[in-house]
Amino acid sequence: MFTALRFSLFGLLTFTLAQAAVAADCAPVQKRGAEVFANECGVCHSVSKGMAGMMGPNLAGVVGRKSGSLEGFNYSQAMRSKNIDWQAENIEQLITQPQAYMPGTYMPYMGLASADDRQAVVCYLKEQH
Ligand code: HEC
Image (cartoon, rainbow, N blue to C red):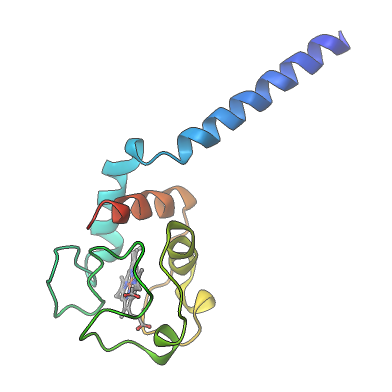
């Protein structure tokens, strides 16, 4: 009986690991990512290359870009001195609670509570070159 229990726990663990591997893959959440962007970010950010004049910096190509480096955008001192490369992980941290991640940022956004939505929107950003 204990052996059977051990086997089923093992099965459960491998199942969970398989789920985690799927979660890291962006394909299934592309559509959700676009929706989250439109609802949560699109009012301040554009992903159309070269489009300026919005409250937030253009996010086309933001993954891999240095923080606070878009030519012509008036960033906060906090953003200009952060000096990081934007990657999935730190963008997710930023949008969890911008003021906590970067005290003094100009990004007037309360944060995105759902980890799934954060992951989806970052997946979407990875596709915007
Ligand atoms: C109410 C307007 C507003 C909303 C909504 C908003 N942002 Fe921002 N965002 C800004 C502003 C303003 C900045 C510049 C902040 C600074 O200089 O400190 C910024 C900066 C950023 C940066 C850094 C870009 C760079 O060039 O370094 C990223 C990444 C970002 N926002 C992602 C997002 C995402 C993803 C969402 C949606 C989940 C979002 N923002 C929602 C206004 C907004």
